[in-house]
Length: 158
Length: 94
Image 1: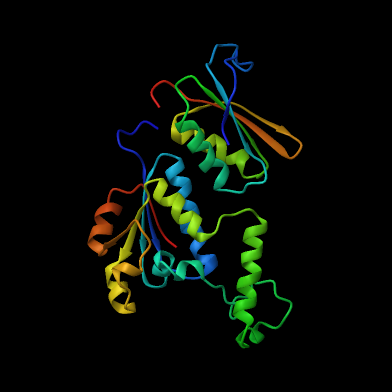
Image 2: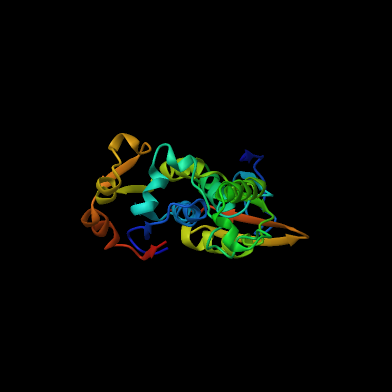
């Protein structure tokens, strides 16, 4: 790396499902390991990843998700308990693969100096208070994130 | 975890390289091998070498990228069956 300043990754995390939480967290941990500066803007359902309680119980729905290898017609995903069953299945896959849970990835992000921006507009829309957020989150609007992202070498909306 | 071993003469370059640390990442998937290697390299001094063992097939592509991005020297990448072994050297200005 020859640049005077480190490379920079700017991510927007917009999904609040269990499977949706991993891509931004994996990319952030990896980029930090490469010596990059990293910022993630958590907005709308993505803000659940920064929610002190909700990030421990993110779910994955089988309904409308034909990639989910459940040997049942997809429409049956509407039945009570199907989302819980699919979530339990995916948690087991993640654990069996030796992949850390979301809480551990948040610890890794903080230890690596990843900037965790909590979208203030989403907080207002969803009724989320500052005290609901995990430690290390920074409440910010779009301008603050764009100011960080303007110098980014890689930007992604995930 | 990282285990410093005795000062040795590096077999890949034939030069004196200071200490070598070993890191076992067998059974770990991306991003953990690179993440842990990053933590281990941070504890080493210039000239030190980190030996990493991995089983994630993605590591074969990831470790050359990790070395290039960080400015480390990838002394060698070997494959022994399902295990990949990487030797990374920390350079003076990193």
